[in-house]
Length: 259
Ligand code: SAH
Image (cartoon, rainbow, N blue to C red; front, side, top):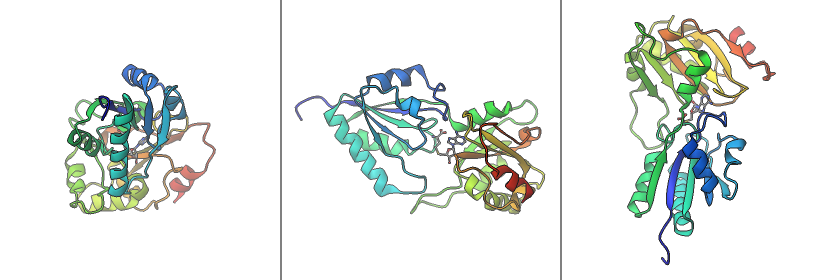
């Protein structure tokens, strides 16, 4: 190798709104030679990388390791060619984003790697709902959890984590909301436990469904417009109201509530 390898920066793009980005992330994007970005990154965020080659590596969740290995390899190849390589990930790169696989691959190859945190979807949704995840006297802990298990991975005990949490925020779970609710009820959670489903947190298309675990269990699976969504479970969500922004003109919420 003729020149020193570059650095790969794993950068959090935030939850969606392009102005929920750190200054450090913006500076790195402006300096980047190449940016590998995920499906959920806002075009305005990407546009900050003025001089960079931009490469989409978005995989829909649930797809697996062959693709991840391919991304790892592309990062290594890019670091050999360029000095500032940005791997831009939705929300915070270290939560449910396979960051560790990328860090480990870079480390094994002796390529330097830095991580820039971002605002994770749970915190954007909490802000949108004006609901503290740790409301005094109601919730003294929060768990971030996913029911999704990758191919070949050990089964996860997500139900126990949710049942033991004062507040639980479930990622990659809204598409199977009714099944999740049924399993939690079977594990002993109360039917009247408040649930908020928040789709497109931080974006103008944000929508909220306020419900309970019991109602969710029989609500059917089509809960959202198809945007990324969180299932948020806990007594702190008791006062949340269903809402959708004026700019969304779809009937999904009505369908859900009448289901
Ligand atoms: N690293 C990301 C999470 C990636 S996993 C983060 O820190 O936010 C992808 C899941 O995140 C989606 O299935 C959804 O559950 C959640 N998500 C991402 N963006 C979201 C948004 N704007 N609104 C609601 N949920 C979101």
